[in-house]
Image 1 (cartoon, rainbow, N blue to C red):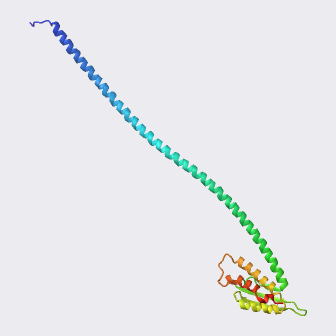
Image 2 (spheres, rainbow, N blue to C red):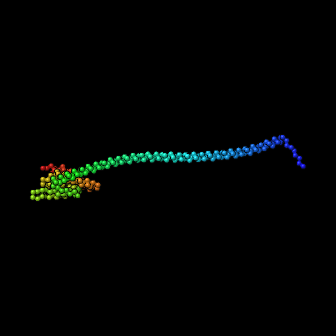
Length: 223
């Protein structure tokens, strides 16, 4: 039969302290786990915040770049609109100038054609426009009591000697050489303007100057 020895008060206190220590260690372990979990969660939150901040930073950068790009586009569109308006005004001014020049050119051409008709009737001379400006070709009609006399001419526009000889011959027949030369010169101007878009031959470039020389030749001042 076992003998039961009653615990002393000291043993009871030691046992109570031991049990209390075990409970404290258990509580401490739970607390450490909670602290670790809290720290882990806090670290996750911090990382999430950092990721969010990086995303926000990137988004702000993109927004800033887009804003700058938009401002540049707006500025470009404003400059483009101003340039288009300026170009429109220049085009309108240019069209008006072209219109005025065409009107002046038509008036001048009409005046020249009227002058040519007048000189043609006065001198009795017909100038072949199709032959100009390379050649001076046509016919002068001398009115007579019984019959008219035809004086045809067909000369190279650069033939200054031939033109001077023709002028002397016409003057000997009492033809107003000054008006005849004016007629040929005006007809030459019309032909040159009609062929302006193309490059004229070398000899054609000197046609007008030759006629002008004839206008100041001694034969035009003889009576």
